[in-house]
Length: 215
Ligand code: GRF
Image 1 (cartoon, rainbow, N blue to C red):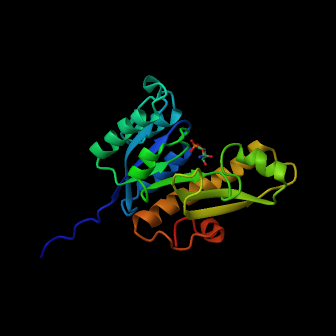
Image 2 (image 1 turned 180 degrees about the horizontal axis):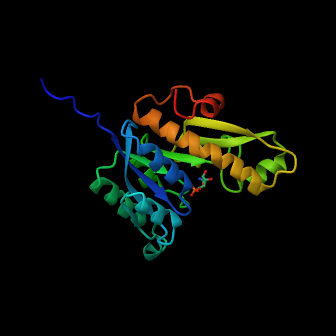
Image 3 (image 1 turned 60 degrees about the vertical axis):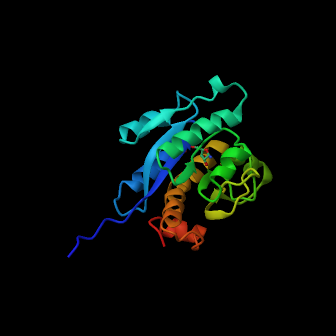
């Protein structure tokens, strides 16, 4: 009788620009051979991104594709990234603190296969400075969202969210840390659901908080 083959894992790349803590959470989750996605590549547009060293320490191939030599030609920079993704047989792309606005070229090329994590409960507070804006707005709940990347900024279909309370005396930094802890739970959960073909399964804040390991 033929031996059972290990399940094929979905080849996943992560694009970063900086610290890489969400990237590290995805890499840590994917260390489990039963996790349905494998992190095969990390690309940073900034050669000095601390996340690059973290990825290499974790044994994940990591490289910079610096945007600066491309001048203002965003599409040419994206073409270089896209070429590397395809050479590496990547099937899913996760943006994790990738701080370049994408052109329609890369978004269309990876439509339905590109995820992002955003530090707010979308559709509230798309864009930058989400924690300060949440405090200024006086919301009592804030949080984070994993969503598909579409042409409109921070607006694609939602895969997972987690909510945190806004507490008296919170600063933007304190609130950011509270949200970040949830980002590190829901991004691996959302990627797992998507890679396993169960995207769209409920991933409510309660599910995320109670059962970070999955449905
Ligand atoms: C996170 O807050 C993420 O939601 C946002 O950028 C930040 C990246 O942090 N898109 P890190 O590099 O993953 O630590």
